[in-house]
Each structure stands twice: as structure tokens, then as C-alpha cells.
Amino acid sequence: MNKNSNAYQIIYASVMVLIVGTVLAFIYMALKPKQDDNIANDKRGQILSAVRLKPTDKSKIEDTFNKYIIEGFIVNENGDKVSSDKNEAFDVNMKNNIKEKNRKLPVFKCKLDDGSIKYIVPVYGAGLWGPIWGYVAINDNGIDIYGAYFTHEGETPGLGAEIANPKFQDQFKDKKIYVEGDFKSISVMKAGQKPTDGSEYVDAISGGTITSRGVQAMLKDCMTPYDAFFKKLQSGTFK
Amino acid sequence: MLSKRNKEALFNPLSKDNPVLVQILGICSTLAVTAKLEPAIVMGISVIAVLAISNVVISLLRKTIPTSIRIIVQLVVVAALVIIVQQVLRAYAYDVSLQLSVFIGLIITNCILMGRLEAFALSNRPWPSFLDGIGNGLGYMIILVIVAFFRELLGSGTLLNYQVIPQWCYDHGYMNNGLMILPPMALITVGCIIWVHRSRNKDLQEK
Image 1 (tube, each protein chain N blue to C red):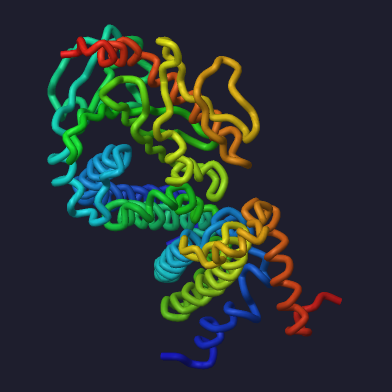
Image 2: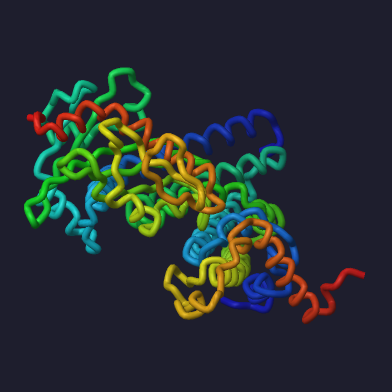
């Protein structure tokens, strides 16, 4: 058989692509449930990280999540609850959600061991190379931050990727998102600089300027819609 | 099992015929993944796996592959293997796969793979091809680990994310060298390694 005839080449290429395609599809289908579990478990771990409760043992994440996250619900821009289904709130895909006009605003209510209540909201934005996202936990007074967790898909290790470092995230603790009654998102500033709008600020990552700006934009973009909800927390009128 | 020729296929790439140092292949990923030791090691292992298996597959198919589309055939095999590695990591080593997400995909473009498939697997039997893949993968991984060792130590003061430079050094004014984390220093580190390597292997020096 002539290996260089057109017919041979076309058949060879087609058969090969078919075989490879089938194998890949099979592997994808076989591993999908396991991967989905991993992704969901990772998300639970991230939510718990915002309140510093993520267990080191991965197999305990689901139990810890169910124990501390006592409620999950979705609010609208007026701060009214539109759904109190925990799974629905958990399943909101932030990537698609932030593009929509009427965003779903998921909130996770967390009850710590000392009985205090924290509200965790997801944030999602763009870094230098890809998406960055995270979770911010707010005290039940609706004013200051209890904890924050950020992570990323592919920021530069040692530079932008440092937003996933607890040292960076710990800076957000106790920062106020309301200054004299107005919502002011946290600014991420170069060391030695201060924001002009009077908002509270944290130090940016040196060498990770674009990612730091991304964090600032992400916080503003994703927390502003919760304004009404936070105000209701402050006045104690949220049901 | 290990005839003289097979031994050469396995051990030559470690030093005398090192893909990074001598053939200057795979430099791009050497720059990208060596800021920290851990991704460098996982990347090295992944490349070894993909290189060895794709070498065997291509070697088995070598008599049927039409010459004019051989590059396409090689790419399809490599791409399929890389996707499988990625899917398996995502299912069984999720944390590692998060760290390496972009880099694993980049194995496809690693010149070492194409180089070995073209130069060796297409004209050799499966077993020597397998050894050649392992050897070249190891040769690549060694350099990755050496470069990552210096970059992480001097750039972040850690090794495998454990702090190794004690706090009192920082208290006395020691500072991490931020430049080490940036890609240019990877190139310079590789340059230094090549320099040392050439000075010890005089026969490799260009006249």
C-alpha cells in the first residue's frame, strides 16, 4: 500500500482523530463526577476560608461547611431575599452572573462557635492573566470585614499570585466598607499612598500591580450591588 | 534489557546530550514554571510521563505514519496525552492541577517532545524510544529543579513553600531578591548552569 497516496493520508488522519476523540470523550465522561466533586468541595473550602474555618483535612470540608454555614440565600439589589435555597445560592456561577443585568446576589450566613453571625459574599473579577475570585465575610453589623479570601486561575507565581497569600488577605480584617454611612469599597494602594475618596485601604502587592488593581475593581464591582442588603443589616431590618 | 545503545538513550540526555543545556530545547517552559520548586517538580514528572508514552506510541505507529502528515500525527498524540494528564490530575490531584493549570497545557508546545519524536521515536523500536523519553524527561526535570531551587531560595526565601531563610536574617536587613522571581533571572540562571556545564565538558565547547 502506498503510504503517500492522498487516500491513505486522509483515511489515516480521520481514523486517528476518531480514535483519539473517542478515547478523550470516554475519559472525560468517566472522570467528570470526580472532578465536579473536587470543584464543589474546593468551593466549600474557599467559602470557609473567608471565615478562617477551612479544615486542613480535606475530607472534613463538607461536614464543616454544613455545620457552620447555616443558611444560604439570594438577595436582589433592593436587599430583599428572593430565594432561601442554600444549594441555589451555592450553585450560582459568578463568571456568568456578573455579566447579567439583574445579578443574583448570593449570601452565605455563617454562625461561628461563639454564636456570632457573619455574612459571606462572593466576588469575581479579572487579574492579569485570567480570572480572580474570592469570598468576603462581613460582620452582622454590615459595616466591617471579618475576613477575606482570594484566589486566581493563573497569576504570576511570586507576584500577582500573592493575592492568594494569607498575609495579603489578613490585611482586610476589620476594614470598614462604610465611611460615614456611604458604601466605600476597600482600595488596594501602593505602599505609602492613600486613596483620595477616604475609603479604607490595604497595601498592594509589589510587582503585582495589575492583579492588585484587579482586586480593587473586583471588590467594588461585586460588593456595590449588595449596598441595600448591607444597609438593611446595619439598620437591623433584614429578614 | 539495557544494551549499550539503550543505556546511551537513557543516560546521555542527563548530561552530555541534555535537552535544555546542550540541545537548548524547552527553554520557554524552563522560564515559566521555575519560580517555585513544587510546580517545577510536577511539571517535570508530567513531561516525563507524556514524553515516554508519546515516544512509545509514535514508535509503534512509525511504520504506518505517512511522512507528509507525520507532524500532525505527532501533535495529535501529544495533545491527547496532555489532555489525559490534565483530566487525571483534576480528578485525583486537584490542588496540583490548580497550580499548574496553564503550564500542563503548555507541554504540548514543548519543543523537547517534537524533537524527540522526530529524531528518535520515528526511527527506533518502542523499548529504546521509551528509555529515550524517560532520559530526556529526566534531563529536563533536573535542570528545572536546579533552576527552581535557586529561584525559590533567593527569590522567596522558601523551598517547597517551607521557610528556610530564618527570620533573624530578615531582622538584620536581609531581603528576598524580587528579581529572581521574574523570568529574566531564569534565563540568566540557565545561562550560568550552561557555563558551568560547558567548562566541565570541554568537548561540548563550540570552536
